[in-house]
Image (spheres, rainbow, N blue to C red):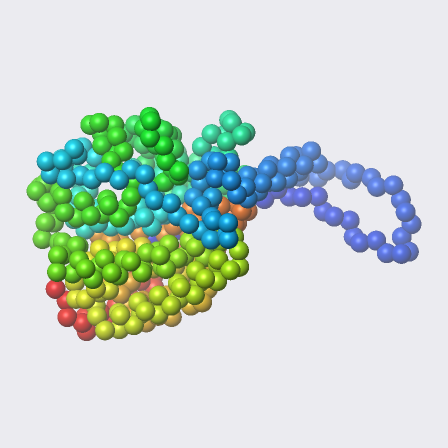
Length: 420
């Protein structure tokens, strides 16, 4: 949970002249001598042109010009409309993709809540030694930098051993190095997630997203829909050595309640924060905002009466909700303008979040360096210079520890509820 410092790189622009008064005589402007180390005027012009071009690319509303970016998924009213995943097959016994140790790889970003729910289930079930994980860098990069007409920015792999690595956002600002939980593409040796998708000849997708569940035997994307992946991780690998088969996150007696909960949690909370953050009209933003906080009030009320969201047993509904809640105060409240209340102001949600975070398998799926670095550095149209907010870790009392997660490590107090 240690969070490495982030340094912003901004070119030093020439100092402007003081404002003139009516007593100043007109005079011919002269170019002053450039101080050593300062950018030359032509360098400043190039930097500004690059900045303008990046903004134009990111603000283009045509999906085809966006290069399959998630930011392009808005309707005519400016509301964010997430599209369904394209690859939706399953791992199942006696099926096309049977559960086998070492056969599959899970491509993830630790920043992405959809990928992180897969990581949480993978660790809870004890599947880490059976399913390989490949993790990208959190800052989106141009995936076809040599093609000026291709604006796509997305997930890329880096060499975690290159400690002097410096990446900038797709507009050329900021400076972001190597942190925790990074890997190369150890399976296909490809530079980007986009390249992974483009190996699938004859089957296109509207976004190059994570998670991706890949079959090494057939070189095929089995699934890129997290809600499907977490279910077969939960149920289909139980016969492998060391798997926690006693844990069932989708128990049959609670399945109807889990499904009913997901039916309102997904559109108003999981996707609700994105509907706020990516809205392109005030009307669309406010509609998403009201629904989000009505649902958070509902969650806090439920958790005032039961230990988990569907009763006294941890279920998939808790995992799906947790990945959004753990990102809320550090990212969504600031970046996505979901500033009605912070999670720390909901006593029951906060206690529940602490309990889940203190479960070590779930904690392994959370990396605040990835989370904060990705959101604040990957969308120049929302945060051009890629400056990452400090949050509570920047307060004097917290600087020595330099941790983001202290608020989740105190006693959660959820023992007052009966639990299985």
